[in-house]
Image 1 (cartoon, rainbow, N blue to C red):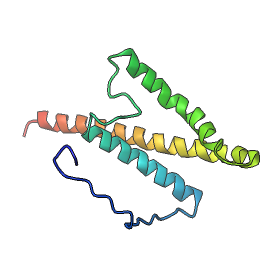
Image 2 (image 1 turned 180 degrees about the vertical axis):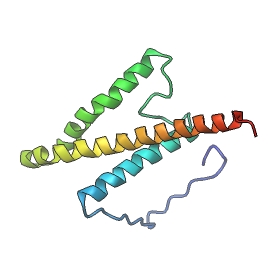
Image 3 (image 1 turned 30 degrees about the horizontal axis):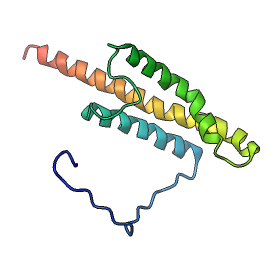
Length: 129
């Protein structure tokens, strides 16, 4: 917004209420949808930081791709360590891992859908009318 010349206004009295998912299925579906949205936003604004590489032209892109997969394993550990009791940390690990898988699955599915849609659109342009 600032790049377009708009000013950002902050008002500490403004409140946003979030709907908390009452089931694990709802939570994982929400994370899946967040992953899809993440992909779409990064496709629209390519200069915005992205956890996955947009291409594989540099060694950094390969390292970024490896990190996307490795993060499935180390991010739950980093998040779980913030809990106070070790039993809570241990219990949280499978859910944190599943949440990461759901989020990254959403990104992958959206990426595949985007590429399939783009390929189909190109094919339709080449079809005789």
